[in-house]
Length: 358
Ligand SMILES: C[S@@+](CC[C@H](N)C(=O)[O-])C[C@H]1O[C@@H](n2cnc3c(N)ncnc32)[C@H](O)[C@@H]1O
Image (cartoon, rainbow, N blue to C red; front, side):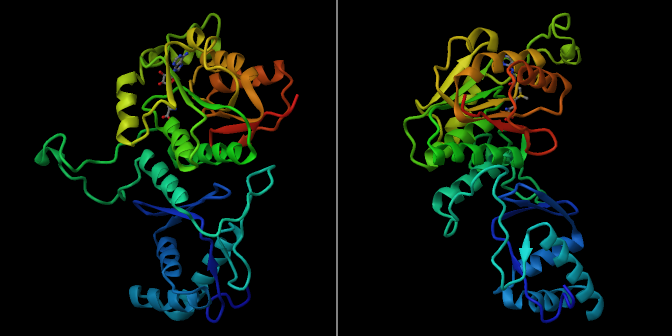
């Protein structure tokens, strides 16, 4: 951009979620799932551009807003804003206003038809994932002391229903919608449930798309992590002090689903250790297999039992590839079964791959 600020035009990408953080703003590209962290000046520039009534005047609008707000001369501001917009363009979060906004399909897939705008199902799923991640109240707002209102009063704090964060929650939604769009047969399963949030996204996707002939299976001990067996699985020695931790009862998970209006007979519980429950259920076929059991033993048994039941075109999501125990189990299984489908990164730890036809 030669004269990036005055007189130039910019269109911010629409499918971007912004989340205030203490020192700025985090932008999440809802198509590529790339994250851009902005410091406070970057956040002010993004917000000023986003508040412009139309792309053609966005730069002028932002300049006048920022000049009124900050003690800065116009040439410096124009240069800073120009550099900022160049960064946005490079990140795929903006384009010159006379070009259509950049959009990046998920790696290795044909793009879905462009939506004409977010529909009610889209908006529901965006809000659902934000709520499950505990992000429905900006971090800078003081918490209300609910004791004043009574423990079950009408006000409460958002408590995350999942520990995996917005990007991996969003990935569940994307891949679940992909199997629906492609007609891949089967149910969805989460192995390693904790409070249930990741499985709630699966159920929410079915609800948003009016799908009543698929189930969401929740496999967990509901008594926390197992006692590792380091003699058999040396990679699991690390987990010794963790036995029994992360326990959330089945009853609590049911209550959590109920609180989100998502508990019904499409949600099925498989309580017990994976080694005992997964050989019996769920029945084939599966379309989405998500593994979040952390240990080598937990990951290995779930893959061995369930991967053969996954339909061709279905997805495997591995939450904890960053953990040595989990990564080793995945690598060993893929090597043993000669699985060549490329691992796709979700964020710093999550990966997925798509099962190909035999
Ligand atoms: C990291 S937490 C899951 C987090 C959850 N997916 C989320 O979205 O927040 C791991 C869960 O796996 C369960 N788990 C691990 N290994 C297991 C096994 N072999 N059998 C049954 N449950 C297991 C634990 O009880 C715990 O709830």
